[in-house]
Length: 262
Image (tube, rainbow, N blue to C red; front, side, top):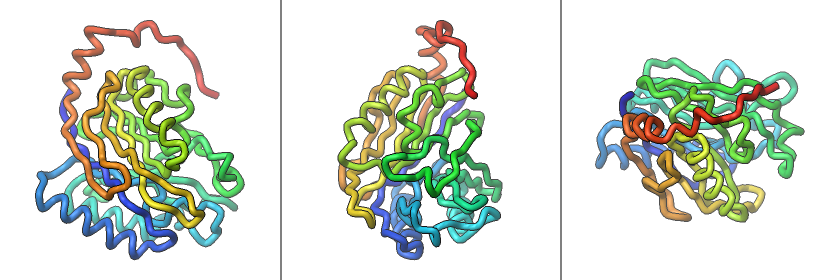
């Protein structure tokens, strides 16, 4: 196994203003790379270009690619890395909350959010994703999740098919303790590195977000974290040789229960 250098962007999403969000993120990322080396993976939050405005019918991009996907491709090529973040994309008479993964060569993979946030009526406007995906970068296998997915451990259970779990979110400050706790729990129970990327600021519905962007090791220990309520990019290089050694020394996964998802 190898290493993977990750940068996670914590920022304040401007409601329904793609132009402002692209401009702000470009400046934030440019400033980061002036002082830091290249990364393999640059992570953005859930609905990073618009905010979590699922009930607005006008906020959805074409399935064959819209302005946000074009922008992601530009950033991926510019910084020669994979860039990933969630976008609302048209599908049938609703839309999907699509977690795009854009490679520097223009290749695109995606995961559609499985668990829809009932309290926010997401299911009324968004189609449920049905495929659990594993995305590979530099030989490292990654499980992508979006926000509310974090609450459902069966969906994210490691079948020894991933080394790193990544969740991008618009997780409210009112339930921040749950976010912090579940990220650590998922790391420990699945014996995997975990990255959580969350926004800050108030959205167009007046819901506050305090951040909580973190990188956690396979024992649930914090590697690095962004300060609350501040825009910042955090980064680290994960050593998957350490993960392999830990699992060899403590192979709890061998005693896991077999199950099937339907």
